[in-house]
Image 1 (spheres, rainbow, N blue to C red):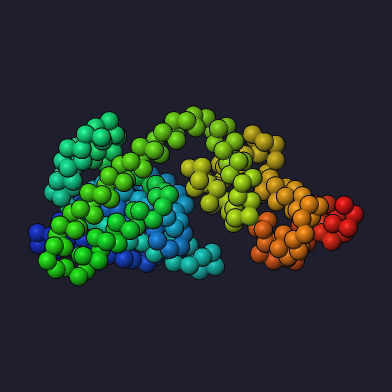
Image 2: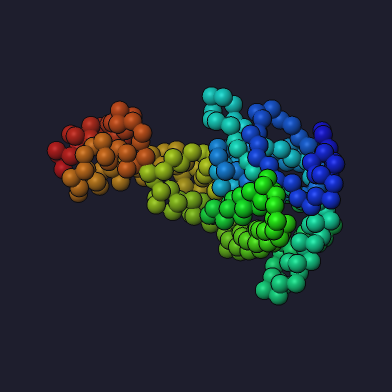
Length: 289
């Protein structure tokens, strides 16, 4: 396992280092002396961290890692997807201490968890979903000043950094609240079922759903079947087919439009699934109803 030193990534007296990377497909576990925020702005892959753990990671996700944590991000195999593109925001321990002091001075954040974690000595590795482009926008603003350093750049980078950490602090607190509300895995399954029923037209891959529930793909599949009595893939297909049947009965949309609306990129695939589900083609079903 590699350990990256501050001198390898920071110029002398430089508090932050910001750059853009394409993550490799090989596992390259490493740790470093500095703090790191990695934001995925394109693609999807896997985030590996200590003790052989891993989580899917995709566009809009970001990782916040304290010094000493072993981790890495890998792109999927060539036949499974494109490269993962990340923006890396690296921060020296001295500058993070300054950030921590600034966060502690904001009274509204007194009861929040993350500032205390940053000020503490225990290492941690957090993976979160930004929910919007705010994290990336703030990192881009700082990156632009970092690359085109000129008068006032230091102040803009500092302001962007503080705003970035206020946003992350707030986001982490909201994440903790959501996890507190979803106190049992049954709550997770109920929430997931609602997600599928309201987003049936989206590409609901197992990796995406596992990432959404913070469960491994294998465990999610088993537990969903245990809770509902139906395979997850069958539940998605049933949800889409029932919606397709309703639209065939109650709309003038073409079969091609309904196919696309229900999440099928190919009308041929839609027709194949529909016939298997109902015993007739979509056209036959529409005529008979």
